[in-house]
Image (tube, one colour):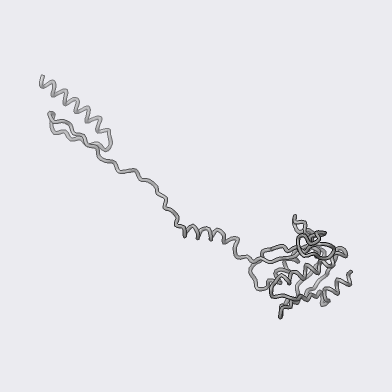
Length: 209
């Protein structure tokens, strides 16, 4: 009987060893058939986890500043267009009951801001209407180029060349207002003198009127 019991214990122990051998992290100690089987589980290391480091506020600010760099670095000046029949509702009243309206444009930084402003206005040659704004460019039929510009003691002298063509009598005060306002927007200018091909603008427009 004793031998049979020992055989049963050995058989059970062998089966138990076989099962436990398949279990990772389990070690088995067996001293003899009369000693209880001791099973110890080896602690498994915790699984690696991915951590995200918080972004310091200074880094966030630097990233935001960098993102805005593409739109930074431009200067802003005005060109002047006409709201026909507006009677001064949108700007200074001029001519035939119209309004002179400042329109902001962006330019590359330059010391020659007056030249840059005139250049932007002259780029609209051939365009009577300014986009979908409803504003009118009285110089659209004219072709003008800059010969010389100077600002001395508060007086801006604009020497232009080319041809002025009006679309009607009301274009005369509109053209003069558009050109004068370009210079008068700057704080260093109190007076404006404009000539086209050496002829004073007022005289030239009077001849055309």
